[in-house]
Amino acid sequence: RHKFWETQPVGQFKDIGNPALPEGPIEPPTALSEVKQEPYNLPNLYEWVTCDIHDEQMCDEIYTLLANNYVEDDENMFRFNYSKEFLRWALQPPGYFTSWHIGVRVKTSKKMVAFITGVPARIRVRDEVVSMAEINFLCVHKKLRTKRLAPVMIKEVTRRVHLENIWQAAYTAGVILPTPVATCQYWHRSLNPKKLIDVGFSRLGARMTMSRTIKLYKLPESTVTPGFRKMEIHDVPAVTRLIRNYLSHFIVAPDFDENDVEHWLLPRENVVDSYLVESPETHEVTDFCSFYTLPSSILGNANYSNLKAAYSFYNVSTATPLLQLMNDALIVAKQKDFDVFNALDVMQNETFLKELKFGPGDGKLHYYLYNYRVRQALKSSELGLVLL
Ligand code: MYA
Ligand code: JJ1
Image (cartoon, rainbow, N blue to C red; front, top):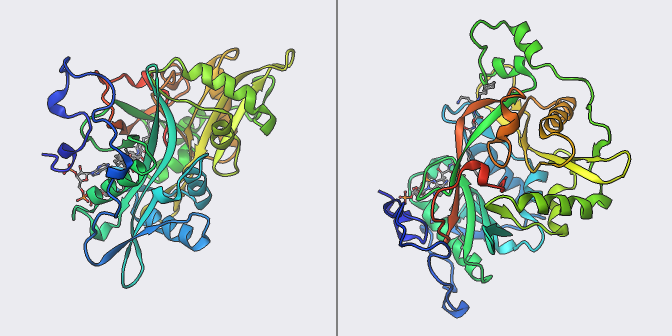
């Protein structure tokens, strides 16, 4: 049934529940000299291109490919519209490899028609920290679908990851593949309910009017937690300690150091927002919350073309109740004119979703590891990892 995935070192459906299979790498690393030195063959009309994301024109081409061909919801009403600044951020974390940013062009016209990326990350699975690639932005132009281009893209990124002596990967997808480490539910908190209903993102509830709905989702004008403020560069050491300690409680989580925290969590306008609570008495950093900006194009609506969505990223509470911290996150997202605040049911998010009036979406997100078996699928609350 999965002609490609059956050939890959991933957990297979037939092996689910087999106690004889050990947790950990499925196949051992090979000598670097045994890694294929030449790129995989593409169909003759196409060529590989390594994408220099600093190149403004290259960045434009990638942006346009994704804006027109990347992930849509199941009814094709919305399509992710990652911004160029976001893509530059997502693709250049500490230690990134340009060779892992891979495009495919039509030889004659040079048009970019496919893309896949990896970035390096240290990911802990139980008590092992594993060097991995995080694979994202796999995209094949709509006109070239179902021609088995995706398996070639995946094999090529795998080869280039192997050349850096890295043998495992983590990725997420909306589709079921062999075999999820965990399956998460998307939840949505309306900030601008009128627009969400107008564009078909949500519906007026039973026995609800528009004005009752607007009132239901109203939020305070300003945040309530004393000492709640934007994260700054000098906070990196304290935030790193806070996050490392928090993430140690989950079965799968990134192993962030200060460089990672500076890259992934220091605020960047229209890309990532981070807030913390600095105790007014002790000046200790006790709590942290963050979200990233990922708008979606609205397909075929006469009045609106863009949906401004915030996605919950990493949140840590030690002194402020998580519920109150996340309510403050909703308030700042509303101040910044987001239409909706999205979250997965990972980490301790289930403890605030219902109370803060998030509702379950129609989308699920499956998490996967490449060449690393976990004995049993995890609960979403056992995941401490959020990919972009
Ligand atoms: S998830 C986001 C994926 N992108 C989209 O959904 C955008 C819109 N869709 C498209 O662009 C295309 O439909 C894509 C498939 C490109 C997705 N992950 O070429 P095909 C398998 C993995 O004929 P197309 C993200 O970015 C499918 O089961 N495999 O199909 C993370 C079938 O294999 P099999 C997928 O529709 C990506 C084969 O591809 C996915 O034209 C992680 C069919 O190929 C998917 N999302 O193109 C990638 N969708 O027959 C894996 C379909 O066996 C990384 N397929 O069922 C693995 C780790 C690599 C590094 C390892 C290092 C050590
Ligand atoms: O955004 C999503 N669904 C929305 C819109 C649905 C439109 C019709 N299909 C949704 N809205 C309901 C909101 C409502 C607000 C008030 C309270 C009740 C709920 O459910 C979904 C997630 O739910 N998103 C997608 O389907 C996009 C794709 C998700 C898979 C992503 C794969 C990512 C690739 C990783 O690299």
